[in-house]
Image 1 (spheres, rainbow, N blue to C red):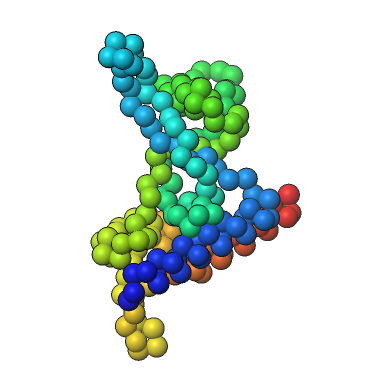
Image 2: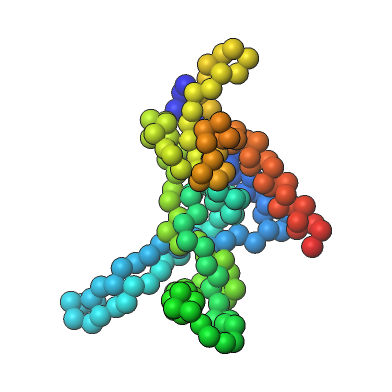
Length: 184
């Protein structure tokens, strides 16, 4: 299996899925990376924050971009200060603080933000073969011929027999999303 051709085909497939969503009017989610607390000039404390890292479309277990990159989602939260009245559990207060930090980092109000998404190694077949995340490279038998195929673990507890081919998974998810947009 030629790494360059697999990588190029995979990137084109992923970019095509993102482009179809964009053309249908879907709003991309914001990607963010955590920046740890630090000291500015060695003395001024700066609290942990978030930096923009691009945009992508959440398709179940995967996040796809128009550049052909694919990520495992990470923490998903809405950048908003809206709160529900009444008693707030400790976890709700922590999420409110997180939302405040996202707004302070200039993420748009009410945007979905995926914090620390993990880039999946579609350029490294050996690493993909070792993956146990949402995108894996497995050897399968099709019509009596052994071949390697990119498969999606659409649920973290799904067994290897429940994996779906990447192309089929993306087509189904994009179709569902586009149908939802046109019916809205």
